[in-house]
Structures are given as C-alpha cells and as structure tokens.
Length: 201
Image (cartoon, rainbow, N blue to C red):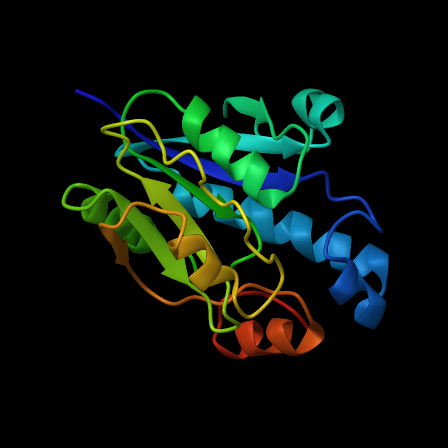
C-alpha cells in the first residue's frame, strides 16, 4: 500500500532570513523567534501515523545538518529555483503515493485539515487549500501518473492571482479544501493570536 507523504517546507529560523515582512514591523529577531516556535508547534501537531512527515529544508546544506529541527524527521533539500520549481521538484521526488506540500507559517493547520486533503486525493488527481489573500497554503497530487509538465509554470508568486495561476497548471480534476491564512504581517499575527492559533503578546 502506498503511504501518504506530507512535505513541510522550512527555512532556518535566522533573523533576516525568515518572515522578513513581519520582521520589518516587529524586528527580525522577534520574527525569527516566532517562526521557530510556530514551526516546532506545527511539527508536533501534525505528527500522525496516517502519513509520513518530511522536511524540505533551506538553505540546503545548512538545513540538512541543522539541530533546530527534530532529527527523527527525514529531510530533503529544497534546491534552487523559485517556489514553483522547488515545489514541483518535491512533488516529483516524493515516495510513491499521494503527496502534499505545505508551508510552516500557517498557524491554523490541524491534523484534520491534512487528513481532509489526503481524503480528497482518494477521489481527485489534485488538491489545493486556498488562502484569503489569493494564494494557498497546501497543494498536493494523487500521482497516479507523472505530474503535469507545466506544473506551477507562470505563477505570479506573492500576488492575489497565485491560486488561480496555479490551478491552471494542475490536473483538471483538482479539489479545493479549507481556506486558511498564513502570517506575513503583524496584522496577520494578531488575527491568528485572537483566534487562539498562536501565542503572541
């Protein structure tokens, strides 16, 4: 039986390297501190025997030897290229079976969301989780056949059209699941804190 794979994209939580938009508002050190705590909580929360969690790390060499992330979790280098090139590489290189890629900066992700996405891949060739800003927090493929050759090509990243651009490159039979928000700004962080999804004073 093919096992489901959950790929979680992470960056080394160093000031000035992660959450720089947030860092311009709260300070780079505080932004990196939040990202590290957020990612650690996410990894604990999503640990589940129904799927294998794999970390896609960046920068490659530093991430592969980092002591920040749990040593029990397998690691892969994200490699070069824009976000689309890296995600396409991760989806193509995952073990046989359904595969999903998420980022680590979405405080609202719970096991039930991941389970719902994998359940959708039991009936559809693709799945995507929209974000309120026109992007998305999750993308996955059933992988009964090779991924589309133009997967993620021509997507305008960090824009209000990223979701629509991506859907055009995915299999026609792609399901949409829950809408969840990521954290890019202080307003995003405060909204997540009000909902009890992250700790922030």
